[in-house]
Image 1: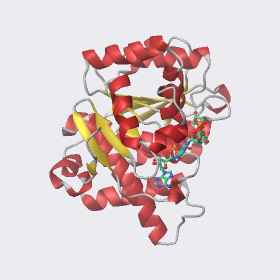
Image 2 (image 1 turned 180 degrees about the vertical axis):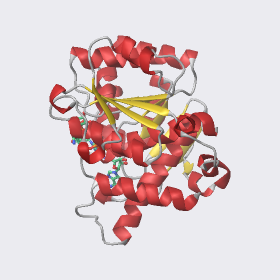
Image 3 (image 1 turned 120 degrees about the horizontal axis):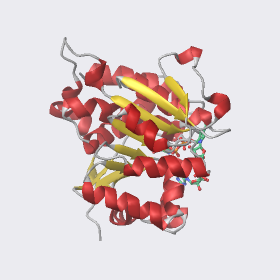
Length: 297
Ligand SMILES: NC(=O)C1=CN([C@@H]2O[C@H](COP(=O)(O)OP(=O)(O)OC[C@H]3O[C@@H](n4cnc5c(N)ncnc54)[C@H](O)[C@@H]3O)[C@@H](O)[C@H]2O)[C@@H](O)CC1
Ligand SMILES: Nc1ncnc2c1ncn2[C@@H]1O[C@H](COP(=O)(O)OP(=O)(O)O)[C@@H](O)[C@H]1O
């Protein structure tokens, strides 16, 4: 029987969140360079939402490696995003960019190019790695990719975080969504054991645990969050906080906990103001997260 999760309360631990405070002399290099990978044809929006969250939650540079050639161009609505075409030779692209943090998965799809970028990300040493959506589905379908993830975690413990929703968790555990939901705590522990990664099991009362951390549960959040793209926002937010964390002494566990709580609290705050639950959008949630985070510092 897994131990019962304790309540996630990291936003009320000033010693943790205050580490994001910026000294007057800081520059973008201190806020970290993030690369986000995904956005196959038809799903560019998923990666753009993750990128937008990464930008608004404070990363120094947000670079988007987009698989869809038709969408891989500068966005005049969000000119801060550095959007480029994810070409073959992912290893070279990552080595040239030298990211502090990598996120892969939103709208990634299942193509050979998607697999190449996932292998390159898993083999990129040390940098915190956030794995979501189709990147999780690809790992669920391939023993070799799962082995590469496990090997990475042996070499660089605590440097990968997976953010499955119950459907993705079921694919990873060769189970069903109903079985995952029937015992979320046990599913969480099974995912940690399988992947050796920090796991964020999303859904009502998101759970987080890792090989070095016992389970915590987020009590905030509401069904207004059930809108396509809301998970992409969480991925971009973890990425942003992890990118700043590299020079602000927050590890990937801290970044995951801060982002999960902030994400759910922002959605609750918007509902209190009458923005949702019906029609609450991921884009609005990003702006509310930024407001709440700055208020906390
Ligand atoms: N704007 C866009 O381009 C978007 C693209 N998306 C991409 O679309 C691809 C497919 O992802 P999807 O997640 O939509 O589809 P999936 O088929 O992976 O998952 C959907 C299923 O998972 C289960 N599930 C999910 N959350 C649950 C919960 N909280 N409780 C119980 N069951 C739950 C349900 O069975 C649901 O039908 C991914 O690459 C994703 O990144 C999505 O992120 C949505 C937005
Ligand atoms: N009823 C709910 N209560 C609390 N949080 C929810 C609820 N429904 C969805 N969420 C949250 O919304 C997000 C949805 O993520 P996900 O399913 O991955 O979306 P997408 O793939 O469309 O981006 C997760 O953070 C999840 O925890």
